[in-house]
Image (spheres, rainbow, N blue to C red):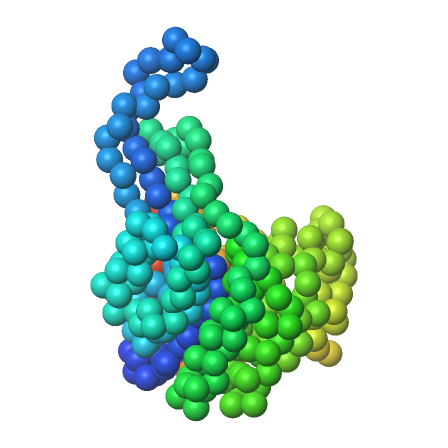
Amino acid sequence: MSPEKQEMVIRESFGRLNVWIIGDIMVDEYVTGKVSRISPEAPIPVLNYGAVERIAGGASNVAHNVAKLGSRVTMLGVLGDDASGRWLKGHLESRQINTDGLIVEADRVTTVKRRFATKSQQLLRVDLENTEPITESTRKMLLSLIVKSADNIDAVILSDYQKGVLSSPDFVRQIISVCKEHQIVVTIDSKSSRIEAFRNATFVKPNNLELEAAVGIKIIDDESLNAAGDSYLKQSGANALIVTRGAKGISVFEKGRPRKDYPSKAVQVYDVTGAGDTVISTATLGFASGMTLEEAVILGNAAAGVVISKVGTVPVTAEELIRKVYD
């Protein structure tokens, strides 16, 4: 597809899409300051507090990516009844993301990854989370929301960070079944090894390590990559498998076809945080807009090239992606 046609898809088709994201939302928090001495109490640095910054992470970063690319977004997930949850809900709403699908579970905490850092160097990360599966009543509520709006949904992205929302394979199967019935594109980015639940998904996007863990094959060369990808595709029953491989780009597996590789363009890499979220977001929008899988993957690869040249969890905008496709 020519750059001109890609631009047309981004400018026109993306804006017509109604995309729902369901998964584990979280707050990425950065506490920064200066270190000038070692504590007399223990051999650790003393961080003199400077500032705190909060960013929507996990599945909410996927939602942020999709919104920045121009599509309408509804976020489904679970929050705790706490300050972090209220901040995250308000933050998403300020980005014009529909939060009607965010459910508060009274006995749950909102997931927060709190990083302490100085001069871009992390000193410590503290995770506040509850990784237990969400309640059955919450699952029913989320599924009901999807069923009620299914006729108006173009794509559903499942973003599983193993924090409880998508822990139930049956729940994942139910979501995919609704999407298949209503011809909704359904894509998955999951850290789960219970990949048999992904049958009939449009495509699944693990990274190299997630692929290895899911099928128990160490990837050391092309032969082992093929074995791992073929095994994942067979076990999962997904229609296609997109493997993000860092500096090596993206590899795609489809039933009955040889592996296809899409190398990354050489760019200055500052931070790979959130690149996987960008790939799943952009490729899903591309495919839901009528692109072939190959065209959608190429566009997702280009989007990843933009975000890794930034510092932190920062989504790609439609204008940045358009500039990238003309590179």
